[in-house]
Length: 171
Image (cartoon, rainbow, N blue to C red; front, side, top):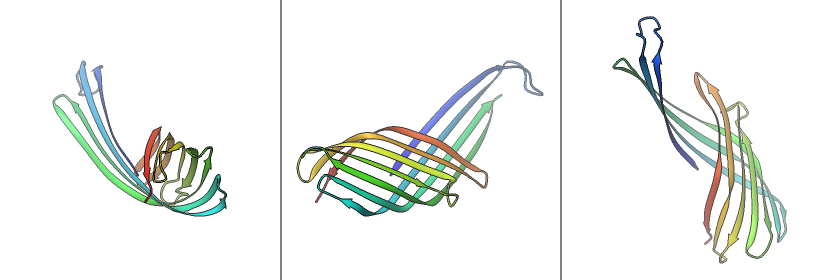
């Protein structure tokens, strides 16, 4: 699952005279975007050795986007709000390799959309994992999530990337 909440504020001015807008006018804008996405995957193990596993993946990814925009000028303000979401098929692969009894790495890549939801969405994740006990491990890595959605006037075309941290408890 991923949740992102971003806000951008901009001010422009003084502006030149444009139509009824007097010279020296300033324009302030604020945009707030919230994204929630969740991916549900099932897998089939095609390679299973003590030190290396390889899985094929398939499932569905759910998206929900909410945008709020406000523009202020000359003591007037205008608001625009929109909210939209979609679900799309996803396929992928995951590899896990044990380097020592305590240290391992994992890589996962998915691709989806195919015009059913977004035109195209993909993700890539790589982590290094350290096992403390048979039940507890920690992971650190990097993830990229990219989506290109344009449907019925709603557009969401973005790439997010950054570090990831994880804690796993097996019971």
